[in-house]
Image 1 (cartoon, rainbow, N blue to C red):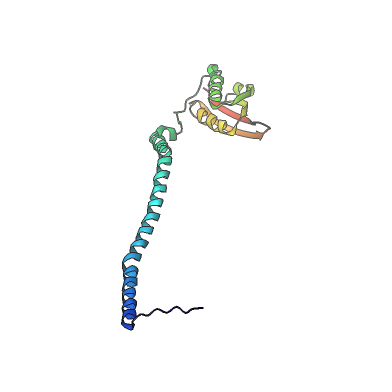
Image 2: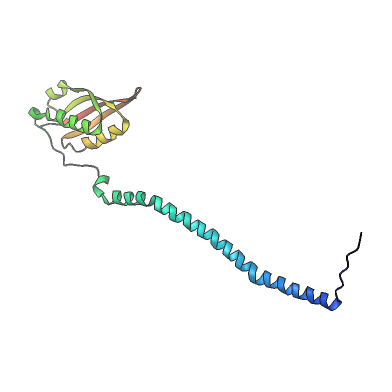
Length: 177
């Protein structure tokens, strides 16, 4: 094998090392920080692009929530001034109850006024009601019953889970004169 010899003068070699060191220092001091800064800005731009995309997708949901929050009446439960029905008008409750049940999506299985409670001189008249439907419908139904001014109280609510739906048994008292 032949040996490869480069004849470089000692002064030239030292100049080469010095100039190479200067170039290395310029790269380390000048170019490397700019490279790191640019790579950080690229990461930040990607993060901002993701946030902009997220804001565009969530914008309609936010607008819907703002509009829902403006409707103050949706958050207020009905609370009418309490009155009493005449004994001859107690059939009105059955119609009002049917309307509230229809609005809530519940089905009335039975609606039985307790004749014994109407015959006594009491100021209340008992109704035994059985409904069928979903639990969310019961919530809407109770809100609807809150609008009836002559509703005295709901004594009992019995909830029983069946296949496909739920049964709700209620004892409802109405105020009578």
